[in-house]
Amino acid sequence: MKKVITIIILLVIVVLFGGSLFYLYQKNQESPEVFKTEEPTTETIVKKTMATGTLIPREEIDVKPNISGVVDKLFVKPGEIVKIGDMIAQLKVVPNITSLNSAKNQVRQAKINLANERKIFERQSELFEKGVISENDFDLAKNAYDNALQTLKAAEENLEIIQTGTTQDAGNAATTEIKARISGMILDVPIEVGNQVIEANNFNEGTTIAIIAKTDDMIFEGKVDESEVGKIKEGLPLEITVGAIEDKTFNATLDYISPKGTEENGAVQFDIEGSLKLNDSIFIRSGLSANASIILERSDDVLAISEALVQFEKDTKKPFVEVEIGEQKFEKRMVELGLSDGINVEVISGVSKGDKIKVWNRVEEPIAGNPRRR
Image (tube, rainbow, N blue to C red; front, top):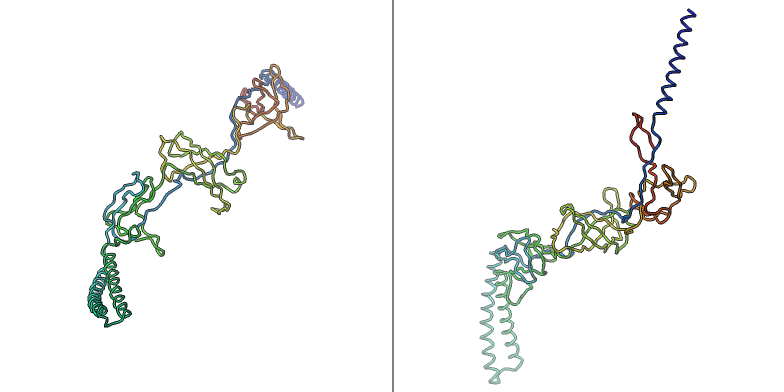
């Protein structure tokens, strides 16, 4: 029994000794620790915040009629360019039968009254010339005759309005000819020939016959979150990207920041507007969704390194990098940093172009199945 125990103990000692030798052998076979390096580059660093919105014309109007009627003719289609005074549509007034009949009766009655007042005036004129009546009686007869004339004229104009929707004396105050009030592009014609339209007045906003806008003067209209609104100010440059127009960026200037925010889905949003600098060769359609990069700060062609290369002292929190001074030998150098875009950071002092900076926070390729983090 003692002999068996002795053999087992010897075997355990041999296994442990062999394992130690194998571990030391493997340890000696590992490659020496090697760090990669990166050199500073010349970059343009841009610090920006984002806003979402749409592109719309700065000036856009709805063309509405000033009389009610039925669309008889349409002279334009969406996409056409019009000038001030160009015909948009022609209306036809469909009179109400009751109102038309009443207006005709008023004209007939006014003519009867006028004929009677004319006879009275002619008799009074003869008597006045003979000196039978006073001048005051003559003036009363003349005044009654003039009033009868005016009543007939008003009745005839009322009949004309009911029949045609306007009169010659009304001019542009009421007309069946709908004309463009600004020069621009027809964005939409929401009615068709035969549709009834209602005049714009104090009680009704009226029917829109066409929408005209100046598409050569577009603005970006968007929103920014309350956490970002304190970083921006009027006059900052914008870079506008449109999803429907690939590989194109439009420059703009921030013109307006709303002084009052509105709550949307639990977050406070502020309206902003920016004027676009358009390229004549590219047509931008009204209502396109767009994203605006608001340029907060910008540094062009500066010495920069990846933010991943920067380390910070535990106590002072001052930044430093490790620069190679020999074969896999590094020294610590304090650096002064400038503008950062979250990926690259400007280096004001501490390193020069051509310096090789230690990549300390990368994961190297695994060696013999054992990954090692540097």
